[in-house]
Image (cartoon, rainbow, N blue to C red; front, top):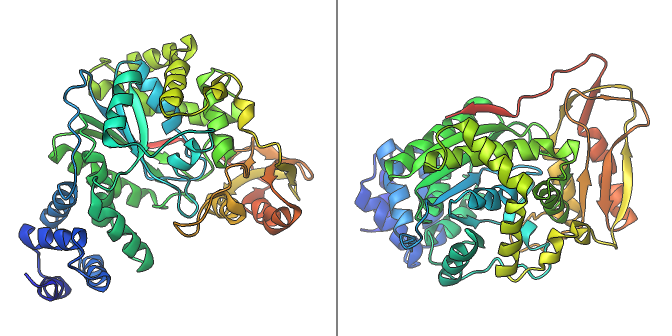
Length: 437
């Protein structure tokens, strides 16, 4: 089956068969399709569209192009959470140990940050020594020992996705729901899960900025998960402002450890509230709790007793990190970092926050990547107590920038200040959970 024939068929708007989609994915994996041929077919899919049947065949081909983990020897329900990403989105670091402490195994395969969205692996690597590059066997052993493991995607899991995503990113074909679903779900379904809870973001800092688009993506992923025999639910959550208090890799880990220590700062409460909601849904779908109220109570008890923190500590030890961060989270804060307030220039109320601008600003000073090969500075970041609806006076601090040198401050301070829209009339706070699907 020649690539040109498959490309021409989709170019002309005809539906591809499962065999043709399988041939495409095989060609990606064995390099018999050139990059320009892969890009051409992806562009044809983007423009001409994929039917539900084609979308399912694409997920299936990508999923079974590599290894699907068999965790049947772990005698616990297997559940994971996936977020579509945002600014200050750090809940995985709370959810994994919390759910594991409740008796659910969490095989969490995570990614790195690209652009304004942070990556769980980059956050974890701000813990001295923490190893996110686990083999399948190491991954399995760590789950058995502490209830969860957090690792990067191996070359054997959904191998077609890495190349296809890179080409989608380079050819402006990322924002198409069937391709997004295939990319996310082929990796998550490969984890051998019983349960998957999805956190689909919406708002200025989200990949999908409009609520209706976020709902469509959530519904498509839930349908796919259920079709492949995984109990799946999606929460559409707000990303119209940074989640919690901190943005930046080490700062976000600091916030999460403080939460696990039950030392929750007021500005970090949304991080805890969203973590609790997603964790509770994982427990209910796993059959550990009968309803959401009892699941929330169970999670809260594990937090308050210190058992969730101890699971995190054990995981850090298992993945060769310095577990002293659990006793002294301040060691994550880089002594070479400078701090300076970002000041409001007018009185009023926070009406809107350009969350994308904040994420891009921190990325610009090294807190994230513009290209996949870029190095990340874990110490830089931004902290703010302010949320939409809060009152502020002229000269009051909007937040604190953590930076390396004066040039960095001069480069982005005005961008951070400009991300906050201040008006004279009070604004209504934004609801954190927008929809459940």
